[in-house]
Image (tube, rainbow, N blue to C red; front, side, top):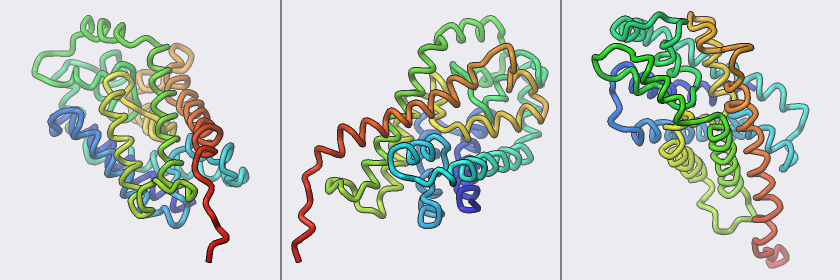
Amino acid sequence: MVAELIGTFILIFFGCGAVHAAVVFGAQSGLWQVAVVWGVAIALAIYTVGSVSGAHINPAITIMLCVWDGFDRRRVGPYIAAQFAGAFLAAAVLYVIFSPKLAAVEAAKGVVRGEPGSEITASCYGEFFPNPGGLAAGEEPYDAVKHAELKKSVPHGAAFMAEVIGTALLAIMVFVCTDPSNTGAPARHLAGVFIGLTVALLISVIAPLTQACFNPARDFAPRLFSALAGWGQVALPLGSDWGWLTVYIIAPILGAIIGGGLYTKCIRPMYPIQDTTAA
């Protein structure tokens, strides 16, 4: 459980840290740089705790492994709790580091934390569709009309489907890179690299739509922290908008189960049967 907490902390600290740097400092040159940081963060987390806990670092992957790969169901709850705790702690540390600049950006843009428009900084923690982080760029004040037009570009159904498909592809690649029966897989010590690259590729395609979650702990724990840190209903709109639940929690879990099933039932049976009787 401690390993899952540490691994998820590593993932969120570097990944959401890159989002902070991009949104409030303009530090990253294009989406691909942020995507690569997320990919490297996943690889580092896998290499750090993979030999201890398997480095699930994602409730959707834990549930998928329980459904399709025999992971002990008694460990699902504790694993998920540890993942959420690691993500929450990472969000808290990032807030301490970036808090002054977050406030400066809000002041420059003329938005009040917790009021409409503060999504531009809340997106450093929880995720929104479409991605509002670009509205923090430049020197012009926050434009509510521009934000309203942006929201129309990604309807709920499209966001939900993007997260399902993205997480399904991630789940397939987790199995592809770790299944001993796959003789075409990369060497075991390279699994973390290829899983990380998979996430980087997915982010480069899907992040403009949904910020590319694929991981309920990555979204909900930082989102909960930001709600407690002053963003309130903007970060966690209970009762008024359930997109955070459907798109960032239900969709990744559903996608992981679908992806795991496709691999287990359609891909794995096609692998050549290995001869285990040879000396």
